[in-house]
Length: 170
Image: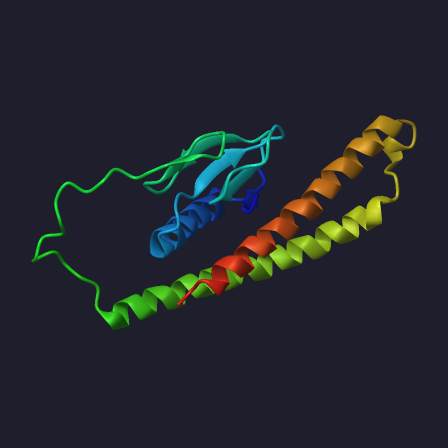
């Protein structure tokens, strides 16, 4: 799955900005829904592709929705064509919007790359130094290693998704 993870400790403002940016990105590309999922640990993931097992869909930001099996249901067909007087966006305005979208995606990519580097450092190739409370509790240590491995994988997938999205920008 490709998406963006928001941990519970990050500001709500960041979450709202991500929702708006992803919604704008999805609407601009016309490539289906960007949906919000949550995993068993409460981590929020935004994605425009079918989720891995274990994630629960909370909502979608576009007209094409996918169910938990990953199958997409088509958007409702338009009953009437666009009216002749319908407002259109001029090319300069659209270019400006595309530039903003690219900047948002580039900023998100830089942030994810930083988070991936931090996660890899913490993970230490699967052998981080045990914390004092983990020295007497091997299960606790294994759980932390699992969470660290998941963080590395998540940030890696997020980077792949952002690079792919940047590649589709005009």
